[in-house]
Every structure is written in structure tokens, then in C-alpha cells.
Image (cartoon, rainbow, N blue to C red):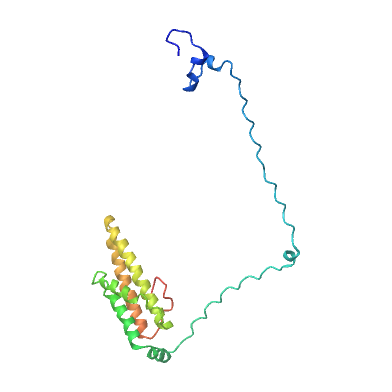
Length: 198
């Protein structure tokens, strides 16, 4: 290796090994051409399938018919309703009446009896007659709506609207509970149990 100040020979030039390139290290070396890029093979386009005779002959399927609306309720006399009510098991009628009582007591108990009523009515729709099923669905709808509205009312207390919402909720809950008891005592099913009204 050459000392500092001495002329360097091409054998002493180590710049190209550490990443530097000096004119002396490049001199005398042949320049290697870069390899040509390989051609990219494009897939051949798939031919379009020929139409088959079966497709041309096949007729379009007829549209599915819309379900028929339920028949309008026929007037049923009070005696026939009483007879249908007498055929219901007494324990189920008592249970439905108890849930209505829990709905009515939801306001004075600040919702505690509503929670009990919701637990009591959950799962009652199984093996219920159409008469009691309408009352159970009505009770579930009443209790779930009241629970959500009570939560919204509690949140809105911050902006002074909660008291108004909770007051309307109390009136609505008592009215729906009273309407349900009246229909149950008169052996009437709830005509539209999913309604928001009475």
C-alpha cells in the first residue's frame, strides 16, 4: 500500500470497494451492458361463449305472487269472545293481567316494576294462542319502548327537556297499560300489537 504523498497505482486503489469510484478505478474496466428486460407475456383473450339453444328456448320464470293480505276482521259478538276467553287457561290470562299491572305500576316504582314485567313477558310468545300472543307482543312493545324513552329522557335532563319527555312517557305508559287491561277484560285481542298508539 502506498504511503501518503506517494503516487498510487491501480492496485492500491480501494475506493471502489468502499462505495467510492475514482477515475483511476474506472479506467481500463469494460462497461457491462445492462440486460434487456424480459418481455411480459399477455394472456390471450378468452373467446366469448357461443349462445346455446337451451338458453334461447327457456322461458322467463313467472314473478312470485305477492302474499295475500289478511282478511278484514269479522265482527265477533261479545258472547263468542267470552267463550273464546273461557277456553284460555286461567293461569295464562292471570299472567297477562299481571304484566299489565306491572306496566301500570312502572310510573310509581320509577321503572322497577317495568323491568320485572319485561322479564316476565320475555319468552311468553311461544305456545301462546293468537289472542294472548297479540297481548304479549303489545306488552313487549310497550315495555321496550318505555325503557328506551326513559333512557333518552334521563340523558335529556341535561338540556332541560328530560322532564317533559319523562312526563309524556309516564302518560303514554299508563294509557297503554289501561287500554290493554280493558281489551283483555272484554276478551278482545289487540288489533295491531305493533302500533305506537292504543
